[in-house]
Image (tube, rainbow, N blue to C red):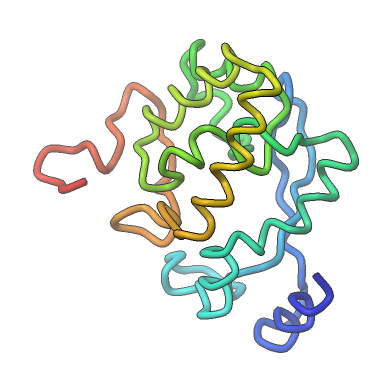
Length: 182
């Protein structure tokens, strides 16, 4: 992690770490910590993403500082990925069930396709995980995560460097709009 921190500092400057408030179990807010992958400023994610940042994300090395969140008890190794607090009011009751467990560094949605999945598919995987929570599933997800990271599957959405914003279930997922290829 020290080597990555030096690279981030040299290529992107300060701060080295990206901190953002995210909802955890039962919607309780915590500060997620990751290595910074984008330049500061406004603009589209694709414009702010750096080559180093793209490499860190594609290998999931940007997530290493999140182990601090696991040690603190904010997160687990396996569980639904923590999303933005603004999404809390946009979930259906079924989607909100993802907050019945601690969020994880990896989860069922990550091994099924990560950002290549639609929001509906991600939330379905999250609630399936909540319903089938057990050690065997967690061990399988951890093993499958290694394969997903090595193959670099689903790092980015098909038309974006990151996932498009979740606007709620009353609105279609951007990739599900008529005329858009998925």
